[in-house]
Length: 240
Image (cartoon, rainbow, N blue to C red; front, side, top):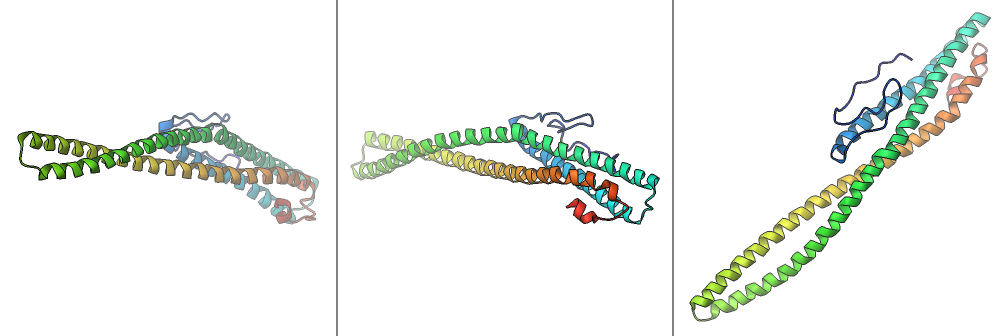
């Protein structure tokens, strides 16, 4: 189990979260935030699998020790296997902690910066929408004025003014529609980023719980190793 092959790179637009030699910092840009989230999720899944694999290895070896002869050689082999499993278990826990630090130090600040930027843009667009609403009020006044002008006797100057007013109304209406579309896009983007930040917070909470459990369980597995043959402590109790 210790020689388990690592999975391949999930995406090529972001840096690999870690290598076989050691963990490297995440490398990505704001435009690659979607690919980064995919890579982070895949890496966390891999780390969690390794974590469970190490725990399962300790459990299997502990259960197998019940039927093994309690000779010194057998106990030594079982103890060596348990020590190897404990080391693998500790490495998996350290990898989870490193990935958690990468998320906290790199991924979350970037997402928070994006959310802050979008909130500023949203405030600007909201201000622009307020201006557009005032333009809409002016548009209504112009329409009322056009109706009054049309009731006047036909005059070339009045007709020319009516045409100019109508052209101005059409321009204001098109600008207002464009501003409303931009505001809707910004709202959708802001909601998506807020959901991403909430998901990252949930993942960090789960990783914190797993890290504390790993620190509490690893010493128990090492202390119970000499009593493998005696079976004084059940494998499930040693694991939990």
